[in-house]
Length: 334
View 1: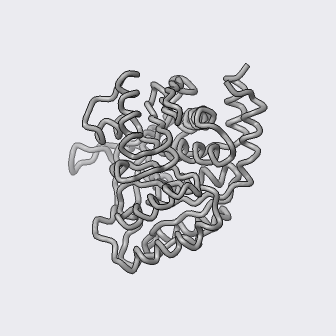
View 2: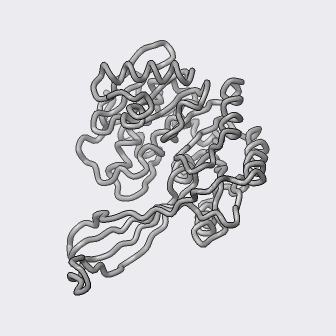
View 3: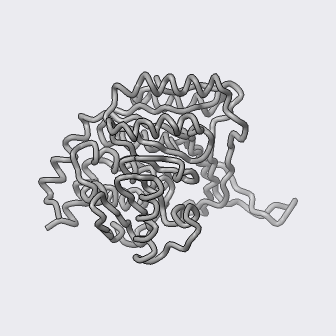
């Protein structure tokens, strides 16, 4: 196992790196309420509005994680010419994150996940329902052309490409073809997190599905070490990736590296889970930064495992920092 000094060296390289995040940029909206009384109109609770918060979600959350860890990051994706799209652009700008890669599409609603959080006096808020605003139409060719143009202009500036594909259409056949060509060239670290279309990607450095996604992609049950190992080998063969990291929730992570070795990591942080929202974004972000900063696959997986454990102990869509990662490593390493 690598020493604390080795991990400190890897983390110290994070601020020197430049990462491009290509994918579905979303807004995570939280409406905080308090239970009031039962409605006279129907047997439902009336929730009294307390507060509203908009956070970066999906590919935007991956972008935020990379920024928080000190690297330069360039998000490339589509936002709508609507209130939430303008809010996302404003949040990026306020944080000092480049908006040069953002394509504003009139008539394209910004993908938004609105979570209704409810509490009683002196109790913790819990999510009671989620409302998703999604774009279900086809992307126009001129929008796709503009997206590829932004991608092409920014690629010479970066050390790695992170793909955050939630299935909302940014990663079209043409865009995935461009990603695959980049992966095959071997010029960049290319990491892919794709909810539904992972098998359409070829030659990435590493892919990072969760157990459920692996199960749905392969059409077979994935639950124990043996089935996870078989799934990892099959996914690597199908995508021709160098490595596969399967996240397993409370079971931790399983890594198949380039030398055919399997590494099983127990979950970091035990049962202290407050909210799993966006944990996968954090994992792929740290994985990408670590691999770009000289880490081996095992070292990158260990860092990503710590990061995932840190953010699920926080409420809402969260990020982690170098200081938190170092603190976690000090707890784990002798």
